[in-house]
Amino acid sequence: MPRLCLLRHAKSDWFAGASADFDRPISARGQRDAPLVGAHLVAQNWQPDRILCSPARRCRQTLEIVAGLLDSNPDISFPAGLYDSSGADYAGLIRAHGGDAETLMIIGHNPMTHETALRLAIPGISPAAAELGRKYPTSALAVLVFRTPWEDLTDHSGNLVAFVKPADLRA
Image (cartoon, rainbow, N blue to C red; front, side):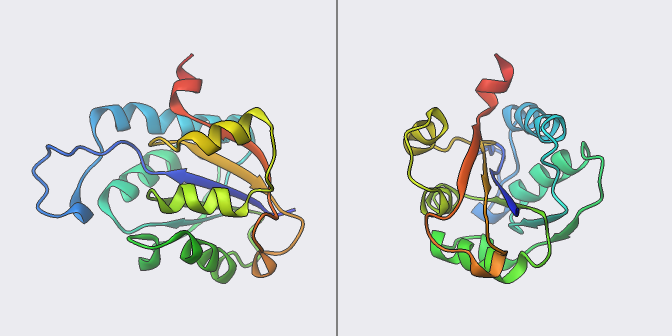
């Protein structure tokens, strides 16, 4: 069954002097949080075989940290549509680029990452679903499992198996 890992980029540094939003780097907190999530991916055996990453600097830096912890060598691409897009477009990118990936990871931005997770998850009352409904902080990871191939992805068709925040992993 296809697995989707939706990772919001690590905390960015608003005061780093970047002239454009696209060029904003991750902060010291982001550099601490991203390895926690990467290590958790490995520990849970959720390692992606394909990663779609926003081309924005903070997403690429998050990818560099997380990918450095993986035991695998995933196929990585940087679709422009992951930057400044809508939740509907993330779903379209997943359908278009999922291919034969068993585990597909998206590293993107809010509100699109949050909207995509809410849109694709089967509504439920689990603790993970309740947390997902509240907020999607930086470095948070939603993991959904589907019964259909990526190209047949529809709204509310994914079983939310986990919603992990860095604060959960530090505890």
